[in-house]
Image (tube, rainbow over all chains, first blue to last red):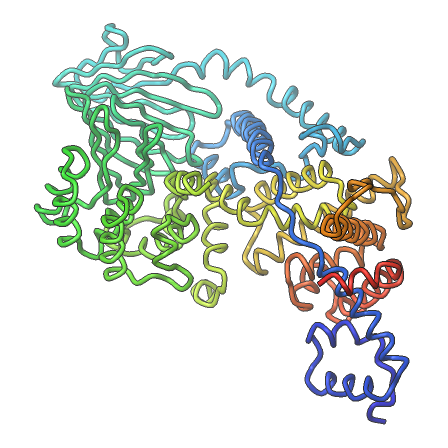
Length: 426
Length: 202
């Protein structure tokens, strides 16, 4: 029997090493004895050779822009649908939104969305259905959105807050462009569309900049506010004189002093504290400072040593340079890897290697993460290493997080620094 | 149960990035896109016989579907299996639709190609020959039946094992082996006239 049966159907699997050892041996033996199968094997090998000559082609550079545009469009529709279904409580809506993902297109994605090459009746019908849905179910709420969404409900918690210099009663509305002010004895609460709330402490001046389906934005000129947001990331922003706080699903306190310096304390989830070209990712339990003209400093845990915190302030805002970095590196505890990780992208050359050495000593690099890769700020390696460190950062900070916040612990957003690193590599 | 999944996962980067995507994190989406776009594009490009514009459309469609359905991904399979299944289905759906609306000849297109024509030097000739071969192979792959075509593209561009291809295509390993075998044989027959050039190519 052995070697008798022809093997022409197994030849590709044989060439690819996909046959079990005994089967492979049988094919080899048969090929030695059968000229017909040998000829067939040559043919198959030639076929394999042909295909192996093909190379992976680089996708055109502009594909992402089209995808992002389509996602933005869908995100807008999604928000409309959610607003149309306002009978649910905000929390329920937010939970549903998170569960389903904030950008679902599902089967309603028109195939010709991108450049019309793929037109067909099904996408057209689907697009029509979307339109009908928006016009029908969403139509009535559109007027509602136009007329009432442009202002937010404000409740007086204490004293006499004012809106655009008018003292408010027990409740009021804050329109776009209007300032809410609290004196030394008053406090107020702002309802942030359907996505959360902001408590405004005494001595605060805060303005509603924008409220759209895809973006809600406050400006904090001075004072202190506490935000609790239950919405997909990057829907709620607070401008301060020296940086923007972008909500990534979180709760936080933000304070601005008279000199325009701000302090951010995150109590749940993550906040990105950013300017045009600098970003700090601040997890629950950590804080971050900003200075006008400089932007956000490096995030840190406040229970770090005094020398660590002083040196970090010097490094971030006072040109502390190598000496300050030396002290930061020496004083860093395992939890301070949050700070060190951010410093990788804020240092160069020898300084970066010093940060790397300390970081590697405190948080061993995961498989696949190399010194060389980190030194050139490889985005995937930075991401992977950060993911490994996160449990250390989160350990003491989120003792009671389930329900709405529960899923925020597991994974964190990708920092913009990674995108910057990627651009840097180009 | 969840712990087991996390610990035994062989592709932690993908897994974590996917989880971030499920939180709606756009940077994670971008990372995922950058990591996989060339392979998805290459599959589409060779699936549609080198039509770059169509391959671009397909790539965008695949990632749009991916991003909007990512909430449904439950880590029951490898992420890449899911991604290539989406790619495969998008290519095959598009192929069906194009056939219905603007039928393409399913035979080997012998389109003449102008790679410089009158080449002077032997080096230039060799280069043109390589391009000629690449074009011919691409055309020949494009003329295979979609099932054979996609198996070959997954094998060579994604370097998937038979088991992984079987998972993507939802068929048995034996079926994968037989499709690849048929695909190679057809390619060898159709491009028999290039044999001397291919074998002397290196």
